[in-house]
Length: 467
Image (cartoon, rainbow, N blue to C red; front, side, top):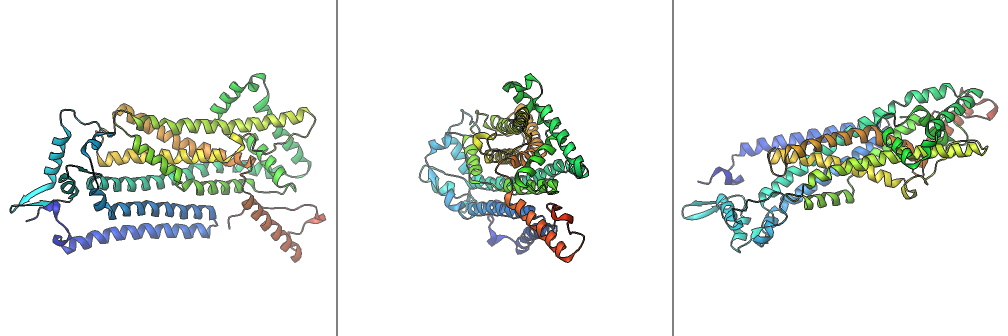
């Protein structure tokens, strides 16, 4: 009689197969329908950027599922690829006991997978050991290792989805805090009061960032920018000054544009791009798996990379605001009308996209590390040699939480605002809303409704709307 561990579908009760398949299909259909309904809801609410982000997330899940499918289809072929035994002892995630030779270890493994019955050997699930053992070699990758890779892909997909949702929730919560500043601007937008209010905010903006000789030194300026990202990363004067600079540059007519709604849609558009897993992120995954060698503590040291990069990016964005304030101060000292002027010159190499790619890498690398931790925990247990000591585990988890919260709640919204001071402002989004505004004004003018503008000198716009 064939043992339970080697039982195939030929000798498995049909009711067991039917029940297991039903549960798997039911869970899959529920997940698919939930994503479909979420997409329809986002379309009804006019959240087009979030809908595109959801579609992008579906594509990434499909890619991960396709990778898992390839591993399943080709698992027989992979397990029958043989390599010399000595190659199996190099670059291991866990160091082997020196008292046990590789030959003895291989004999033990083969013994566990071979079963003697009626004078013939019945092979269990992994017959690659038998195939390669006859040649004096070992399989390139065992079926057990392939199964564990399946688990890792599933955990990575789940953690990636959860972290993406967390990023959007925290980033949106931060930008919604700026809404009352937009209301304040609307209250102060009438007549001469607007000019006086704007001048006051500009004075407050450059005074906070430029007054004092100590602020003009590069070291102190960077230190102030570094610590500002942790508390009050965007103040009221920062928001109003950058908003007015954006409007004066890209909308000279000074429309009453709802900049806050535009910023929310900018965040959603950035989130749509952040959700994707680009080729260079997959390259990082491969390099990490390659360098995860026992004794190198790669997992521990690599966890510092997203934190260091995040602090550097946050300090750079804050320093760009300081540099914009210095530009305003220089113009005012020469008698010119001081106003924030968007420019790419303050970004690294004059390319704002470098900051976005850095944030994209930070968020993915952080989710990958957390996924790797839970995979090790679920597959090998807390005491696994890959998990390492508690002294290495706790700092990694703490840094992972700090990076996720700080990047989602502070750095990404800060980037969404500061990037509008460069060439990466959402021109298509802005132009589309302006066209809608002008069309609504023209329709109301033709109908003689309340939208007709007296004197023909001003246009009132509502800015981006969620339709």
